[in-house]
Length: 190
Ligand SMILES: [Zn+2]
Image 1 (tube, rainbow, N blue to C red):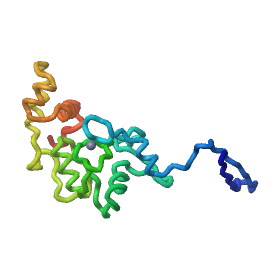
Image 2: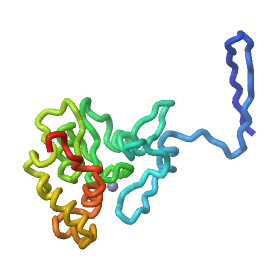
Image 3: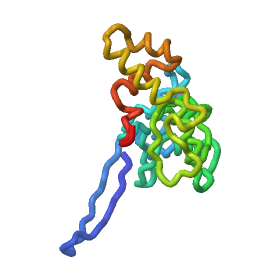
Image 4: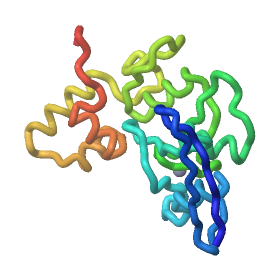
């Protein structure tokens, strides 16, 4: 049986000493061991899926030295070294909780914006120069006109989301997000 004794002082000045007993096979785990215990590398897509907690925007959360970090950023640093200042770690697979280093690449906030728009998501980052959203972006496959057309066709009840995805040459999840208003929310002027 191994044990560890901690002593600390309470607010009222009393000194407390407590001994924690650990099972005989206990050994302190490294950050690396804790990290990979939370990763599912067997996923069919090739993504290494984070199985523990995620943030509201879907990124895996990991804590190291009592500091919370995004799991994909931790993975990048673990495999490749320090992330240069100002750069983001982006996903080529578009799966926020993926931590496979082969699916991660460095980019600027503007790269991230273009990437999101390419994938049919609305970019809401501020302070990003040269980043056009929606139909102003020349690489965007969708325009407001097509979004309206898609919504009208769907409301007619004659088309499934899969059929619309084929018709508009978009992924089904992109179509789903547009129809639910998660992306391409009507702008104030539009
Ligand atoms: Zn992935």
